[in-house]
Length: 325
Image (cartoon, rainbow, N blue to C red; front, side):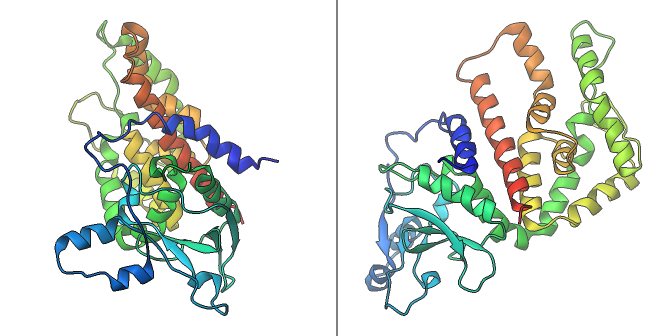
């Protein structure tokens, strides 16, 4: 029977799969190598270093006494951005508890999956481990496509990048907080913007009321193109919420904020005030009104909608699954 996690990931993949393949001049596949082979190779120029970064390294089973954590497969750094990183080299994908009993790992045949920086992909939630395993199981034989594996990429971000850059993430999110799209209101005294203004009052005002009740301070709404400034007490309350998050929660919030151009909307999802569809509707409110009026541009608006849906959905799924024990 197909698991709920497999069905969830398969429902997201049609949205992700519309992204265009790389141009024909780009190399279609990365290489597959073993750790033993890499130690015997000559590292005599920079080209060798580039190839090292593009290889999928499979650590061979050294002895029968070796633990499963000592046999591993490490994805290249290009996994985080590349389109195809190599052909599928495994048959079965499973999950198991780590040898030290702390967390769950994903197995590609007998090999433990590792992050691009060669750290074990150790997850505290079995549900999240199974969802990532479903992403790997979905890969086709002709190539491993990272853009169809949003949970894997977000998990790597949470494990590797967020612990090292938490302060920078806080600074970046708070620097854009005052220009959050929910605080920007279209003028209501023009025939061109009156429709947007009324829709914002209908859809966004309830969110502003929630912000006031949740954090204790009333947001300032502005119409200036250059934005405005929120009360310092409100900004401090928002920052305190961010600082209380764990690495997976912060990775999800940061990913959604980048896609939404809003911090309030991801916090609404984080606190359970908004669902995925409600969040997407708020993010696209103005553009959808323009589409209703002037029409949808195929290959433009539809791609943007699918990409936004994939980014918000995957971050929300990561947020939910990482909380399960």
